[in-house]
Image (cartoon, rainbow, N blue to C red; front, side):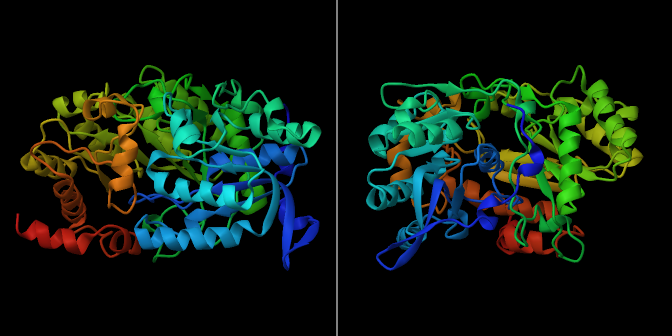
Length: 499
């Protein structure tokens, strides 16, 4: 479906929507009501309107359907009992504003389970006869359909890509008054995995730009916000890391957009929104160590030939980074690449093997120094604390090594466990046990932290604070709002001084 990307505008805001009085309230009649569940924003994470929902909205608008969204991330960010009670009341107030034909919930992830229970209960209470469809990474995990059909009690889910499925579902409801005429929607006795093979044909995602839609205060000048757009250049993952859902989802093979398509979107965003800074959210923007140099040359040359003065950042695997030659590093910097985020995760071969990481750290330290010497590109990295036999000394070693790799920024997280991954089956015996674990848990964001006999969850959470305090101690970034607000530096400092 070839669509005109210039039509991707907020039609709902500009269109007069018919109103109907219901118990004294003016309700907006729409075709699709999207509910974006609340989630825990990781340290250093962005605050973007979800691109997955943006792609759905663009595809819906292309067929002249109307929509609205209830963004639950604006309501709560923690799942404590009092937060959830407030969430239930506030959500009901928001939902009563609309009279939709179809409700879509997503992107759903496993850590949202407590919030999803409330969302679906509210939908059932207020819209008992409407079809409710859940989608997102959680829904696409093989074997987890039972959570939605049995535990949450909804009849429809959307596995995989949604751009064709949701408009078709709306058409089925409008034409036949029955969503079951849509073959792309799964139900308890019918599972269908959606996959857009050529993602170049999709319209650019809708984006809502406002003062809160920023990437990172850390990069700002004098703590002033800088408007930045997120972009996805590919879908899927060819790697099968033991802790990650992406590479363990059925049929989630890599599909890449053409360089011309990506850069056209950057130009479009610059023309319509004056955006000149971009963050690519692909797990690995250039994914193959064997072709990385030619891939970089092709993308960057196209940017330079168009004389586009943009800045941008990407994510790379360590083995892809070390495969870059001097010419690749130079042209990256020349074409506007300002930062590379490296998924290092562990600093020992045994730690990498446990996580199922096939990349190597050989030469990484030296290559990082070389990149810094010949370019202005900043380097950041992610690290995971916890593993099969790790003890406190192993974590302290990782923290020390993180400071010796010539990084500008670093992110530390405990090792989390997700259903559908090999790591999950190291801990749980069946596909359902995680649900009761999360429902009983008292952490504010619904994650399952990997523990071993040496390190309990409380130890790992404490060591995360220590890692940030240690890495940023003496850094020029320590006083920035990003660091002081979002990393628990003061608490980590007090612990660090006693180690």
